Length: 519
Picture 1 (cartoon, one colour):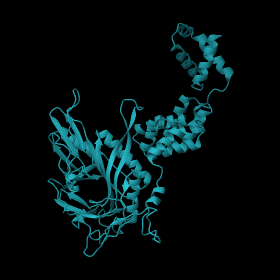
Picture 2 (cartoon, rainbow, N blue to C red):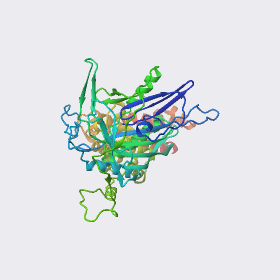
Picture 3 (cartoon, one colour):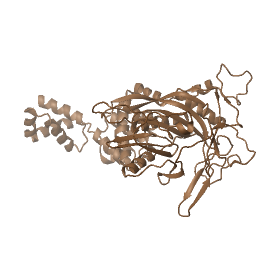
Picture 4 (cartoon, rainbow, N blue to C red):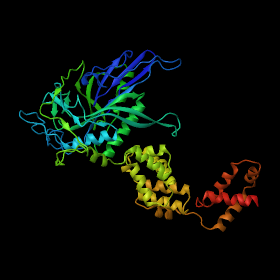
């Protein structure tokens, strides 16, 4: 999960709070400058937030916000990083624990190839330099859910360094006012997860579940290049989309902790330096372990793991077993279309606005829904885009539903748009049909149109007669129109549509009325 270091400032108050994994730290007082002492445990975004102070210009806020991120993403793998234990969410406690996970004497780590490939692919997607040689280290600290007394990580020489993550943010009130910004990726490293401590305050006891112990993590450190929480959230969302596109992590993230810390500070509380876990059932974070005071992790080389060597096509040893080596070039060829490329393709292929392509990707499942509608309808892509982003997404938001929970299928929406495209129904009638579809009564758009008698009036002579009768029956509105009131024509259109029970196309009505008025 993301580790945002946020600084919110107003007169007389300066706050900074951060989060690592599901942990957080809090510092009060004015910024003292950027801090780094070379030790990972003491100079990371979490332990020593990157703070930059500049003399404000006249009229500017006293301090500028600076946000850095440290993110732990669980690798999508069937087994753990250094053991063959299965990875399965919500399994019974302590049912997926190998001898190595429990740190029994004599057990040795065996590196999971899938986890290494996931780290390399993530590094390539973020334009990182992939180190041909990386090292593993032991990070020491004592806690009950860490049986070995240390975690295996990559503190000295990580697998990937010096990358970048581009993301788009809105800089004005209009959706079209978007700019692309970049945050530097300092490093990506492999790390094993710890177990889980379950604190039972009622019985004053702590229970340990080691199912999570040893699960492979990607730790991504982003430099403090962002200026607000919104930017940080946008960057995290972009990273989430990249990880999901690569298949290297499910990247199920939650930003609850940020709001919790804000509420705590605004109510006069203090943010403790502690590790917290996200409880999916409660929908909030719960404390796991105290981390007050400076940590000395006593990093040392991992003696049971040799250096991790990676190759490209040019340096691959002759006769090497493909199952025993990792070829960076082969992994590069396997990279899927990344989110930024997908957005560019949508803009070019369908002529949509860049901000529309962003919404399609940011809403889980919405792009797939849109593409399925496009495949099944003859309507123009711009009309499909409008219906999906305005009508369909609007209904989802109103009822707080995910795309997968929608009662309207892509096929049903495609059929509705076909009816509208061939002028079988009017736009208002199409909205009425969509509302009926949303009630999920198992009817098709064509059946709803027939039952509600929503077909457009197809008889030109009948429409001509209705328009003529309306003009004769409302001479005051006609006079108002001739005096220069442009709104009067809309009233006449409404009167004709009322006479046809909404079965006439407003555009066709307007054409007939204007022709009759000018004759």
